[in-house]
Length: 97
Image 1 (spheres, rainbow, N blue to C red):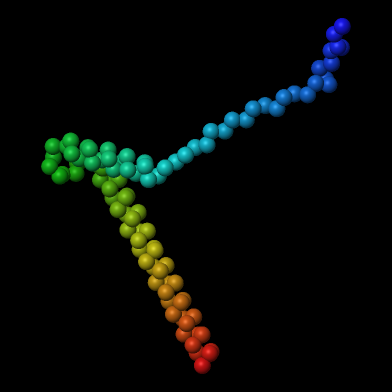
Image 2 (image 1 turned 60 degrees about the vertical axis):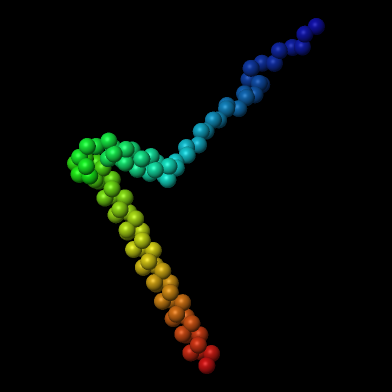
């Protein structure tokens, strides 16, 4: 004897599978690959140091601009923090004496 079949409106559905493939972005690796390709182009180029490729020039300029602006920002912030520390020490000395 077989058990009675359950009607379909009483059956629960199985949860649907969720698959998420996380994206990984490695900026350092990408920059290294870009530099490697740029250097290999420059070495294979027979112009002996002349920059004729505008894409190579733009990438070099962009890279140099980014590093110099970051350095200027960090040094300005460091000077400001140092100024505040000296100011606080001066105020503390004034109020304690």
